[in-house]
Image (cartoon, rainbow, N blue to C red; front, top):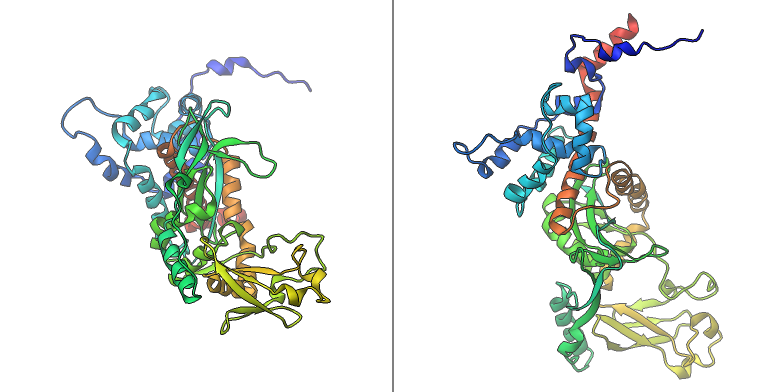
Length: 465
């Protein structure tokens, strides 16, 4: 039977509490029940005058506005305010009633400029949420999964300038140069000449819209200005640390700062990393700090899929005592020099290779001479390779797609982490802190909701009835 709805109900007056209109299993109700936000008052106390001026908006309400934006991936604070005006669950979470005026969308940005700019308050909020999860024994920092993801910057690709900038100097470069000189001296080689200052600069394409972003290009992706965010999580998907950088910096370059400032304080026992971090220095740095690096298998450089008949690098045995390589035909490949990148170069004798029956499987060189390079810190990579081959190492790396990759997928799909509409590293750091704090907040609230003995008892009782 056809039924028509009575539109007069739209104007019907009813006595109802706002709390009754929010479902018991709503995410914001779970967060409000199980997460204590009173710590925010302590964080902002020194940024407000306690006895002068007009009454401010409640700092917790101000931060909850940001939480709503990042929890639900709303694109801007302006749009967030529009959503709060019509969403009863959002009003309930903020502590507003039916008729309370919603704060203006510029309120958060004004408070940021006047109170929170150049502070670490958002990082402290992230740390406090993570600390609450740790207090419940839900976080395990022993095995951490580390990777970086790119976030598209709010910058026009066509508004650029060419700028001469200093080349990024690796922090360990002085240490590497010292060991290169020692290695060359041990092999009776002269020290390398110092490079001219002109070679220490390079030309870069810089955005005039957001100069702190970097031009990023990878694979089939089009060139865009972006930020790269180094991130760490545990085996259960809790985000443990983060740090944003310009998008044109390589993961292995930004890792050192991320590790020394963030990861080192968490005392990890293992770090599971992808191939971009598989460098001699990172292996050395971690192993010297009693941290096991877990890397994937990487195909030898310069070897294509069509060269299956060629010898593998493992077929050439390194003789540590005599500092030379022995080829599959039992011939010796001798040391020749150490370059300024820290690689020892070994070359075979042409007279021995010309009539070798395995020459075609050994090298494609026109000089009929086999060349092998070995970094002076190669022994640290060898140790990590040995662990990679163990069942435990394979099991650790297999979890990457279930941990850090899932964190990035969730952040981009549900929390607006594909791009940023703000400019500068400081605001990218704020966005990262709030995004990952909300992800941990949501995870903690859902876990405690499912573990709540009172709720479990009530569900069991209703089922019996």
